[in-house]
Image 1 (cartoon, rainbow, N blue to C red):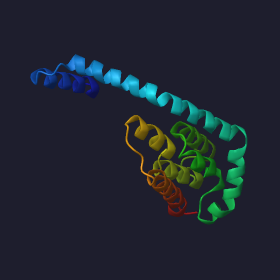
Image 2: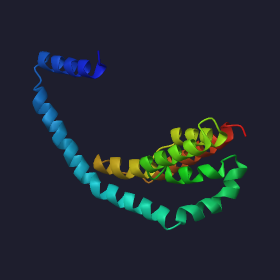
Image 3: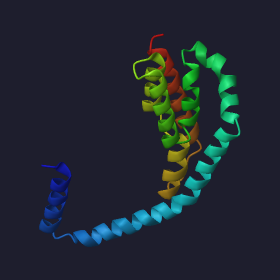
Image 4: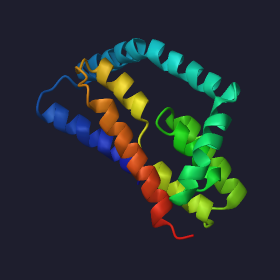
Length: 165
């Protein structure tokens, strides 16, 4: 038996037993979700346009070329640099890059392993800080983004150092 229908039935049963208006709460939550989506849509659209422009104008390739010599010294393969640079900006774009890397080099190759660790050990920093915090009405501290970027860099460098050459 599928677990999801059982979970839904359990929630409905507990709600009815506690005399909670389950349908009204569901509609209220859906309404709030739509408001949140409307609040974050402009930021999301602007960020996606900026990411596309960043890649299309060749800035990504130039930045990778500048960073490659230094990062290769700590074990980060040149092939993973676009993923490393895109990861703080967009989860879906970095997931597409990971798929390309795994298809081209294989999941058991060093490049594939480093890319996988890089993907799993970092977060979409700007997406998380820019959208979730503002949508939730949380006041951003001046340390949020720099600390998150430091964690992203540490995870990316660790990926190169942990996977043997």
